[in-house]
Length: 227
Image (cartoon, rainbow, N blue to C red; front, side, top):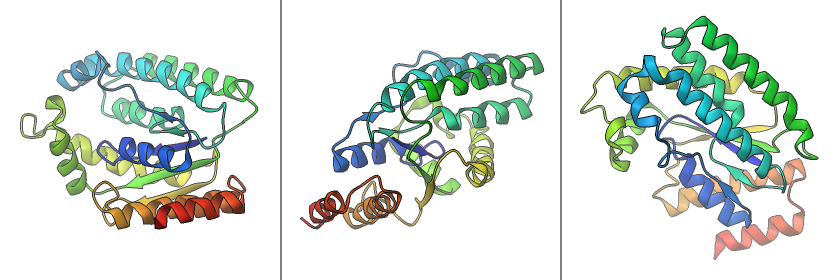
């Protein structure tokens, strides 16, 4: 199982599709479009932070159990990343200490269950996409979700920068599995064919190194990239 991480607009959904198609495995996507709470959260973060995180926690727990069933399935965001958002919001006073206590206890309980959900005890690989604020805002504007736009809510700019500031330390401290970082500012895999091939080869190389691809499988994937 491969998990992706990165800020809003990093390109996780796009890379999840590219990678699962490349590997011939199954993609699991974060429930966004059908999420009834997310637009409410952007309207009133203090009121809906706890509810939103419980919603995501439940969905991600179900998804990661399903994804663990086969090698190299791809998740565009996982439960390992979940507490980053909630604790960032708690630091800003958008969650009470009681909500933090309940959330942390529930997350710890869920994480203890994951080893028993499958033969796997952890992801095979974390692929983190790192982008700056300029790239983030450009992609958010391009995908057009009204509640995410800084044009209508300028306060979101500080919120987005805060996310970026929290992701660096989170990635450095992450130790649940092997990991690699992709420079999403330099490698525009969403629009450039060459950058897409470069990113996929980086991931293939790491999977080969970890023994998650055989040499035969790796050579087949390299030939596929060259076509």
